[in-house]
Length: 455
Ligand SMILES: Cc1cc2nc3c(=O)[nH]c(=O)nc-3n(C[C@H](O)[C@H](O)[C@H](O)COP(=O)(O)OP(=O)(O)OC[C@H]3O[C@@H](n4cnc5c(N)ncnc54)[C@H](O)[C@@H]3O)c2cc1C
Image 1 (spheres, protein in one colour):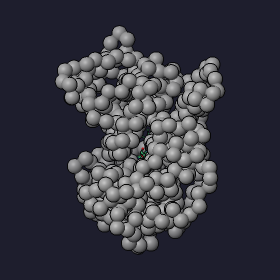
Image 2 (tube, protein in one colour; image 1 turned 30 degrees about the horizontal axis):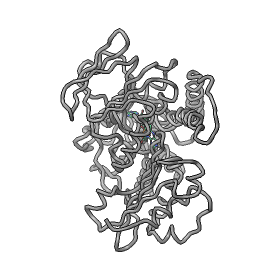
Image 3 (spheres, helix red, strand yellow; image 1 turned 60 degrees about the vertical axis):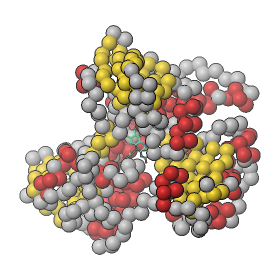
Image 4 (cartoon, protein in one colour; image 1 turned 135 degrees about the horizontal axis):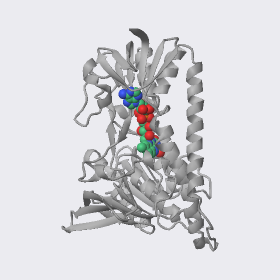
């Protein structure tokens, strides 16, 4: 049996650990079934945002009329947009494979691994034992048990990336961030999009008023039904028919489209690993249980990124990976802090958010809440941004920022100032005492904070 100081399962955020361990002259076995580089680089953030960038340009042209610019899009080359993305992803994979083949002290096992015994993994028929093991095995699309679904050729966020032709019409089951991002993309490409969401609103993690504006804005380009549960799917002459139960009004409805995309959440990959063979515990959703130090219940086995199901974003996964490596390799006792985790939704309009919602904060703290519209600051007016807004939640006694939510152009960029402030203690004064360029859309942040009042 082979022995290794460190085994890393998963080449997404796991690569941070590989680098750290190699930097300390440890022998490392990296196990990945592919595609090399993990979800973000191959199937998630990067390809989706490459596609959405094109969709944003289309939306901008379509909306130019509000500034007195009459523009017409002559042609949208769907295949070109898809191929540009696929070429980038494939070159990135080649680059990464080359890098792995050059790294001294590293053995890369390209295959699906699983635990056979304590601290022992089998991959491609070979067993490897590791002193320290990092599970960074990520997640995959969750496919719900809808009657008839397995009988039709449905898309997931993975197979969508292989499309060569634009679907003329598309039903998206799900209303989370992946659903609304792809809804925006396909609608901009000219597909007739229908979103079917079981909950009573889209993007459940967001402030309800943010979700409401999102639905209103997206509805200009697609049909959105919330409070409907997909019960059955059937192949039909024109494509696919989805039967739903209307949870509010009662009764059934049917929707038909050429293709259907299932985007209802993520499933842990931990089942593939057979963690029970090394005594690693999972929670009831199948994600690997960890403590604040990202240790599993087994000494020297850590779980990071989507594998532990805490906050499933790449920036979180990378911070977790570095922290776990630090704890394991340097014997540190660093705790993971999730209090200022930002995230973005690249729909149209864009959304960005950090910290608590008003409802969650109000349960724990005495709070102040403030709002401002983009149009309340000079640049927002210049942009003719009429609906976008931001909302802040702060602790009444200390002025500490507890949450911040933005919907509108450049939201993911704008929020960073708040994230930085929150990460370093984060009081309102920290932001209010620094100068903001005038006119710039960043004036929205102090504008929101000036409007804070008790609720
Ligand atoms: C469509 C989409 C868009 C997204 N957009 C964003 C975004 O804009 N911003 C953001 O922050 N996050 C985004 N995410 C989420 C982000 O991609 C994930 O949170 C992140 O990639 C998780 O990284 P990870 O290292 O934990 O897992 P992964 O990157 O999934 O890596 C896990 C690796 O382990 C391998 N593996 C699993 N099991 C085994 C096994 N048994 N044997 C061998 N190998 C195995 C897998 O093949 C994979 O390569 C998006 C996700 C999706 C699906």
